[in-house]
Image 1 (cartoon, helix red, strand yellow):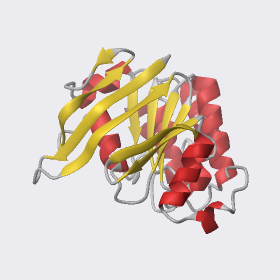
Image 2 (cartoon, helix red, strand yellow; image 1 turned 90 degrees about the horizontal axis):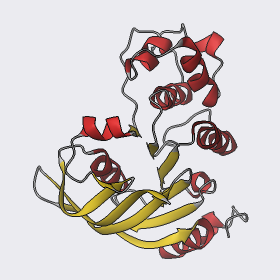
Image 3 (cartoon, helix red, strand yellow; image 1 turned 90 degrees about the vertical axis):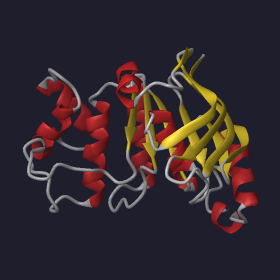
Length: 245
């Protein structure tokens, strides 16, 4: 059963009317990890924004179904209430507050136990990080994990991760895979993993190859990864991952 279905989605920017996505179709099964693979500039972030309902990414045609409900015209806050959350590629922080205060912003009446669990799921010790201040002293990897913990605390049904591996200086891919696996198993959330890196997508159950605003193929991860490598002439790089090829 699918939690998300995207049908012939066309998206353009409200700034100049430029078409960003053209008849995009794919679905995400419940309690699964689905990777959207594509090079920089292929429309991956535009897709994430459109799914979340960000206004400047205008849906000109097509439909988005969430749990069989048509959410194509819903604003961001209504999609969030339904259980859709987006972790941004470049986390935005409120400097000067503590980690636990930041995590509590997104959910009313959150308990300390829930904060501890969200931090633990991303590999951070609550005792060491809850009281720390959000500042430049945190590494890029720590900031990424904290932002992800704040999204987990909202208890999403669908978690959209836009390039979670971008700029990571401490999360190696095995650790990232463990984090994603923990989230799926312990929260029952479905994950839409948006990335251009072969290493990140290995954890996915299924994948879609997005190229020049179009979905080129969808299916099991391995054959989609092979098509991705062949199309972009990345065979030499992809051969470093025999578990894929």
